[in-house]
Length: 471
Ligand SMILES: [Zn+2]
Image (cartoon, rainbow, N blue to C red; front, side):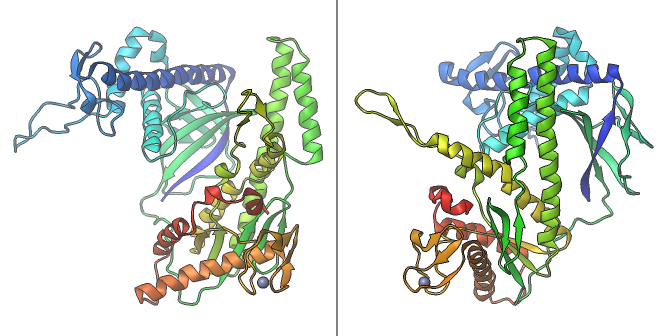
């Protein structure tokens, strides 16, 4: 089993400075590598096949670093032939090439030799992961700045002893040993992260003899609970139970504190030490809010999972789609911008991000697997507008928390009704599966595959009415 434990570090002043310095260097290296890959990719359109000056090798679109398996420079890993006369390890990836170029980097910029070599390698691998995500359709890698590049990973030479950890080139460092690592687990890697109130280390530990949590198959008549996520109340269950939403960053008190602290920053002289101190206080407040939210979400997730059920049905939400900005409207005559309702949407977007549905869902999924319960994500389209009595779908069915069908007059609490609809849709998925396959016992994995195909059937959730989905 592979898992991560997080501890707070207690570095001394030299180590603090060193780590901050490393992060600065690694960030610029990351950005350099990204820029390198972009320019290499663009070159092929200008020249077609060309000779790479750095490596003195021919490169062409096929060997370009941004094609999925290709590379620039010397495209071959080693030209030795194996017994059958084929080239061993034929292609090198862009990541491989950038890793082999690291010694050259250290010669050109000697200060980089202060950073541990595995840390530099992992830095390149981080870019590889970013590209992998891009090829899977999740956006092009971004250049990093101080605020979104705060960690580094090392994989070799880590030692643990009581409440001390040894990191290569940083030395022994104490940490708050808040939970002990179970026997038999070995340290695989560790990631050091800078947060507002100090440094944290996430230790990746593995024990191959302990099996991973596996998803148990669902029986023929499973007990299903439906959950409807919202803003006024965080969760509504299909059995009528509700979980309140404390709105950690959008309640009145938090908004006021944040406003005051931000104002204190803006009234201090730019570039001054006092301004920096005030900015740290803003950052600490943000961290406090996020810590509170995390803790609360674990509580709620536990509450959801500890229900006496076999299957938990959740909404398949597209949160970033809901938080998209309103489309720009321009006057076709003058080209001036018209009102598009974005200022109204802004408040809603803040509430959505404050609720943190995506985080909550992933926590529920994690805990559910631990207790061998299945999680099914269903399409939430029209879940709170559909009449549960006659099936009539209309926007005017719903008025705030009340649901009154305009066709048949059926009435109930709108969100609890939505949760019931979600439960029924999940049941349909379970039953539809068992009917189609003719099997009494099903693998939960199969169910999750089917539920994703269901999603496309219902239509693209991005186009759905946002207001309905948050209710
Ligand atoms: Zn009705």
